[in-house]
Image 1 (cartoon, rainbow, N blue to C red):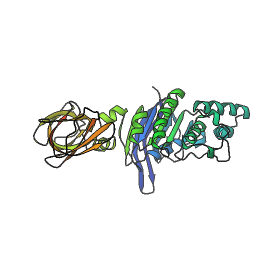
Image 2 (tube, rainbow, N blue to C red):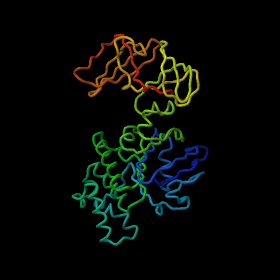
Image 3 (cartoon, rainbow, N blue to C red):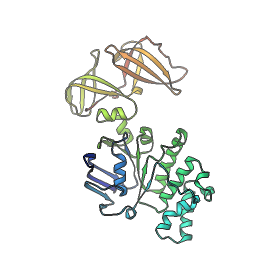
Image 4 (cartoon, helix red, strand yellow):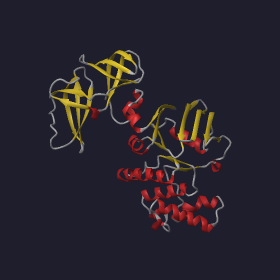
Amino acid sequence: MSNAVDIRSVVKRYATFTALHGVSLTIGDNEFFTLLGPSGCGKTTLLRMIAGFEDVTEGQILLFGQNIAGLEPNHRPVNTVFQHYALFPHMSVIDNVAFGLKMKGMEAATRRRRAAEVLERVHLSSFADRLPSQLSGGQQQRVALARALAPEPKVLLLDEPLSALDLKLRQAMRVELKQLQEDTGITFIFVTHDQEEALTMSDRIAVMSAGHVQQIGTARDIYEAPVNRFVADFIGETNLLEVEVARIEGGQAQVILPGGHRLACAAAGPSVGRQHLSIRPERLSLVPKGGNLEAVVERVVYLGTDLQILARLDGGTEMHVRLQNSTRTEVPAPGTKVGLQIEEGAARLLAD
């Protein structure tokens, strides 16, 4: 797979503040790539630099092998969908979609035909003559997508485009966006702080924090094999358990759990001594006796499809357990002593 975007040791400074610290990553052609992280981590700054709305302080950004440092935004083969759709309120839907084509000098009949084709792709053909004010939030978002796709960019940049939608509509649009990317073959670079959005849509994810890329990988890589405490804690839900590391060899560690049990687990590269173990709640089970850990049930939370069990170890550490909910699920009452069994291969020793 060829690279659509090469980001090479990119630094972005604003006066005394550094927003990006030597970021390097590559994004493949036809890839759905997500920049994921909390507010202020630098993900939108990086997206704006690719678009040309921000200058690069140091480093290089290449689009399909071309250094784009001297290219104005309108001369780059990219288009952007913003969080706020910025549709022209006085223009019809089809005129909004055709506006960028008009700016490029496309003949009227041709641009209207192209706009109609893209509206059909986003299932809005019957709304072509309406004004944006006559559309729902989800429909306006589709118009913004169609407008960005109409000029046939090589890369589409999406800056938290689903954040203004309600939950059910966001979930539906995730499916549509991924399908749209696969159908068009365009490289999508998606910015979000929502872990579920990133996990459900992305071919690969770059997790960012404080201007640094913490980890790049598939959704499964990021979730199942986090490289450090930040990634483990930010992506989904996890139990961070302090353990004593007895030995590390060949990417495997021998750790001593609270209570004295020994456990073999994968290691992300830390040294021996006191470290943290990541265990996802769904990879723990309750057993009446035995198990790797001993705990007391403190609370049971009903979540519809799941039950969340909050249990506390003797040393005070709280552990979360997720059980699939069914009529056969036996729910221990608060105050019950239980064993916690860690699924084989589920624990991962983290770097700080």
